[in-house]
Structure formats: structure tokens, C-alpha cells
Length: 461
Image 1: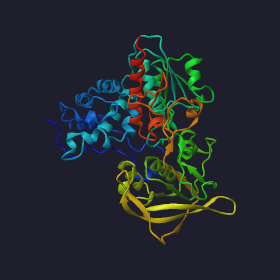
Image 2: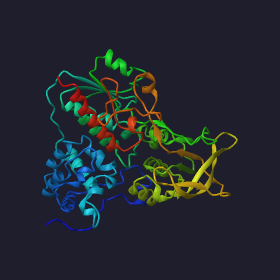
Image 3: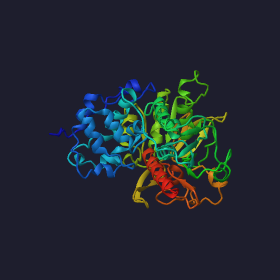
Image 4: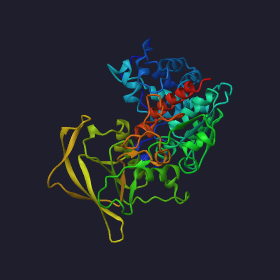
């Protein structure tokens, strides 16, 4: 008989008062005993509704059944048939709105902890099992992948397993894309990301760093001069959006992209051991309500600042994962809801000294169904801060668009594709944030898998 407990097994975590002062991973992971107990909650539904909520179609009941039996290696191998980055997805996927939202156990209680079990299986394989994948014989086809984030790595891995010779071109000095520069160490340890990338390299994938496509080589040069049979563009959405309010050029104003890149990829939190400093001061305001805003706020808190999230809607409308909001509150981050910045003020030396805000109230729903925030007249006030971090979204970098004139794009900058990542330009495919704008890791991976499938189908002899 399955375990009919209405609640999933809690995730062991660092205590909030301790973790708020370090960058070690917050969630400690299930033990084998807890994992087997949680796996026993799965009903092993024949119609597997949870799989329909997974963008990469992991056979969820099958891998959970193996964990229940104690065959953790088999569980990992089942996951790897569809997901090349399971240790990452088990940590950062929004399972609550995807696979777990479809779980039958969630009708009268909490769903099975699918993400926690995926993380357990992947961690066990890395630490105690074996990590390998079979590849088909080389077929003579060559593909270039632009960007080594989740979309690019997934596409590269699937093509390599199908016998393609794949080279990934990464603009930064370290592979991993947003997995390395965007997600903090306490949510996604960088050593783990490197292990996952090493697994993809073991498939024969070559990764070239410090290679900005659009500068070092164009997409057309990859096709015509370098003789690649296909090019996949997974360059992400690295162009930060700003509110365009007075004072955004003052010293002490960061985009969340720059702040998190300095913290994560360049290890500013270890300064002066690492040579990349980051200024936070005593008080920090983070503008935005998404996961990136939570990451930036929690990083700033760990650097010793008093941190406030400033968001123009109510908490119910915040797009951030509930788990991330909960963790931020536990760690002492302040939340100023229904508050909108109108200007950033500076001192005589050009450094941030305060942020002018107004209070808001929710009016009629907008086009997406969210109630539109409306300014409350006479509610203006100054919030004393030394640092402002703007986390209101990102857009695709326009470089590839500018250097590939016949590449179809949307008016807002995203690359235009069909459902399988075909761009309308012969032999060019795209997926992930470069197509959709900033989204989740698993959605980018799903796009990479679809594009790889399309590339393989389009180049069959």
C-alpha cells in the first residue's frame, strides 16, 4: 500500500538565521530514507498526469518507482532519457506549477515532491553512482550552438547523442549561461553546474568560451565559412530592462543581471579574495517581484545589508515562486507591496541616497487578467537607500538580430520560430529566452529538445 500521508516530506534546510549570513546551499536534500518514504506516496497512476506538466516529458512515475525500490541508479538513468540536467532541474524548476500541479495526490493534500526526488536521484548518481549516456555513431553532421545556457546545453546533448558533431559557442569565460551567472550559489552550487556540463562534454560536445557570435563570427559565417549543417541560437535574454525613471545612472544602481553576475560568476561575495567588488551599503532596494528579484535581495542580505523588495502589486500577484518568497521572508528581507519607485535621488558625489516611491492600489484587470496598479494621490515618500537593484525583466540581446538581417524577429526583439524552433531562415533554429523572453530553465530545456529533434528530422539523408 502507498504512503497516504497528505503532506510531502519536508526538505531539510539550513536554519534561516545561519543561512542568511552564508552562501552555502539552503536546501540540504533528502536522505535515502526520506526519499524512499516520499516515493511511496506516489500512486503510480497509469495515465501519469504529472508527465503532461513536464516540459521535457520525464517519465516521472517510472523513476519514482525505482526510488521506492531503492534502485537509485536506475531512477537516475530513467530521468536522463529525457533530462540532461536533472540535478539542476531538481533545484530550480517551478515544479509547483508544472509536474506537481498535475499530481493526483494534490487533490486532497500536497502533491508528491517530484522535484525533490529528481534532485535526490541526480545527487546520488553524482556522488555514489555512475553518470553516463550512450551516443550513436558519428553521422558526419555538424551543428553550432550559440549559448551554453539550459537551451543550448540541452540541444547540444541531444544532438551529440544522435551522432552529431557539436560545438557550443559561449560569450563569457565560463560555460553555463544563466545557470552560472544568474542563479545564486545558495540555490544552485556552481560545482554542481560544472559537473552537469562535464557530463555533456563527455558526450563529445566541444565548448568554445569567449566567443561572441555576432562579433567573432556571425550566424551566416557559421553556416557558410565554418560549414555547419545547422545553427541553434540559444543566446538567452541578457539585456536588462529599466524603468526609465530619473536617477538610474547614479552610482549604486545595478541591473539585476550585473549584480548577480558579479556575485555568482565573479564571486564578489568572497571579496577581497576574488577581485570583483560589489557595493551594497547599509540599505538596499530591489525593484521587482520575480525570482530574479528574490535572488538579488537574498544575495544583498547575505552581504550584510538591510534589504527591501519594492513591488507595485500585492503579494498575491508576485510572479516569484512561493518557496523563494518564503525563504526571503525567513531570512529577514522586507517586502514593500503596492509601492512603485518614481525617482532615485543622489548625494553631491553622485551616489544613491534615497528612492522616491508612491503607494498604489489595485484597479481593474489588465489584458493578462492581473489587476492594474493605480497611484494613490498624495502618497509619495522617500525610502533611504544606498543601493538600488532593478529586477523588472530582460530582453534578448539585439546583437544576433543586427548581424543576421534575414533572421525573423518579433517587434520586442525575440526570434520568431515555429513550435519546433525553426526560424524561417534555412538551417537556423532557436529556443529558450532568445525566443520567449525571460522564462524558466526547464522551458528553455524543452525548447532545446524540440529544436534538436527538428534539426535531426530536417537533416536526415
